[in-house]
Length: 208
Image (cartoon, rainbow, N blue to C red; front, top):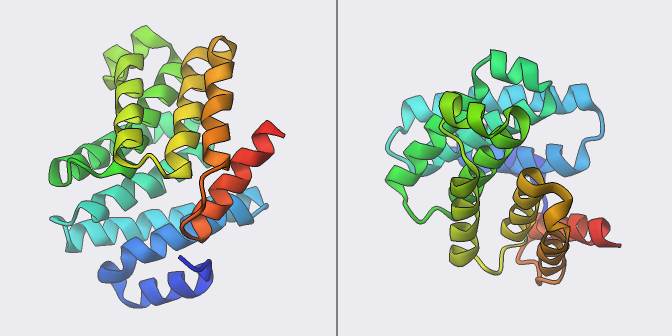
């Protein structure tokens, strides 16, 4: 939470499955915002996926074991080509882990956000018909889950950012005013920790 991402990652890894949630979150934030090299970022996500798989095997009843797996695989899929991600079946793995997370913890706001974005990204990439038939993804569920996360965590910058991102994926320029409003809300929330400060800074950069 202080922003000591490397120390948090190393401390989490040392604890193996018990520390996996901290390790994956810390390294994921660092890679998303502070690693500029694409290959290095992809390699980091691959390491996080392996750690997440170990955590799921060791602690299958912990909601965050499944959420961090979805987070790591989702970040990996965004760092490689969509064709490669689909060929590797990454979308299905993300959906499986998010469904398990929400079954164990129905009010897991980050998982609700991620599931909403999952629906939005699939619809955006393959079109509404194929998204529904092949992946069970649709625009209505995207917005429903993104709004559920906002209701659970209205003071979370990332919830507003991803709501805006979801609207952009689903509707493009038709909802650009709503997207800008979502980013503006994220930018003006007082950050509770280092991750939220990075999120709010990103949102500010989008609307400047």
